[in-house]
Length: 201
Image (cartoon, rainbow, N blue to C red):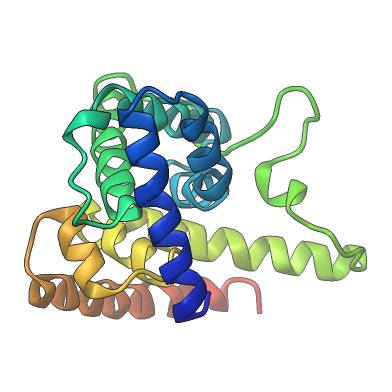
């Protein structure tokens, strides 16, 4: 997103939040249309489960509505939204620790296909599909193996393309701490991916 369109989006967010606070419930729909897709992709990378990601995204927007009067118009709405979502993810992690699942692969019961397959728009050959799926699984496993304090800032930086300042606001730490955590996450990923990638060569 260009700087100009980002500014337009930020201004629209502030306007919609003002409308929401003033009692115009439809403004929440506009905010959801603007942010739900990116938020969902963020959540699916952290939670590794499509249903959990959908539920958490919906829960995040419910919290936006319930806490609308607390929104500070001097901050970016997206940073506030991701702070809410990240806290909900931590709650999900705690719940999973207490209630372990047999598998965390995100498979859709209705289609029998996993979430990665539903994102494919091209029609690669079966061999290419298998290789891409194996590589995606290797990366997914490596990211999932990172400790939470490293995994969350890495996903925010790499996949959500947020600045260190924005991530520091979401995680309530310094930009320097964000930089350090992302660096450590990348170092761990490099170490983890080297042997894993050799498995499919």
